[in-house]
Image 1 (cartoon, rainbow, N blue to C red):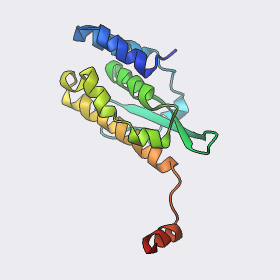
Image 2: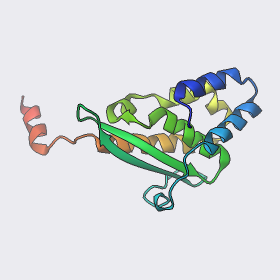
Image 3: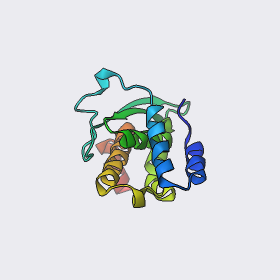
Image 4: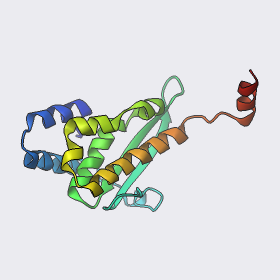
Length: 154
């Protein structure tokens, strides 16, 4: 079972050596549910990653009718797969508006990832976050033109 974000943060804090942290990221990636073959599509591929990364989102609604997004993902690179697992721990199962408010980059900084990932992996991580945020934005109800026009005249 995939650990939650708090457990991941605690484990990172416990590990002082970056070799151990890399091994932990790889282990997180190994714990990901296998991505179904039908999810390895061009539409699910994350652009801007040096490695191949796929993310698929599913939208459901909570009791208040607010969109909740669940993500599955995978990568062909071990460390990047761990970064996918980290992104899923942050975002999967969350309300769309909470996803848009979440500061994932602050979490990555807290873990020290920016200083220890190659620029390509850092860019790929940002691309994953951008993709997740885009999916969340598209899951939210879009105001109709009539409502926007009325709001402008109010």
